[in-house]
Amino acid sequence: MMPAFSPRTTFALVLVLASLGSLTACSSGSATDAPISVDQLVARTADTPVSVAGLLYQDSTGTRLCGAVMESFPVQCGKPWAELVGLDIDTITGTTTDQGITWKEGVVLSVQRADNGSFTVLSTEAPSDY
Image (cartoon, rainbow, N blue to C red):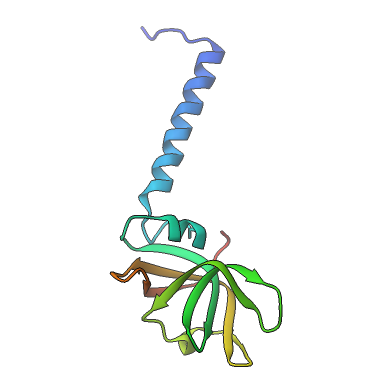
């Protein structure tokens, strides 16, 4: 026979189980999960592939995925940002170029931390509702 639980105990158990499930989903960090933010990418210690969303930004100093967009024209990359390697920006559709800067908001990339602290782009992904 199953023990009887009060509604309060049952509710508490459901909350605990739901919390554990969400922690497990968030900690997996695989490239198939919902994209993380650039803030989360920079703070992340794992070097496994992960999907990340942000502002793709390229100027004469390099290519970055930015966590903040500084509203100006052309836009500026706000911190935090992650330096990207291995991406041909010409393969990204829908970019805007002006005054030597190329950018696109809402880009989702699969990246992996490189030895020098930058991030190697493994693939680009179709934007989704995240």
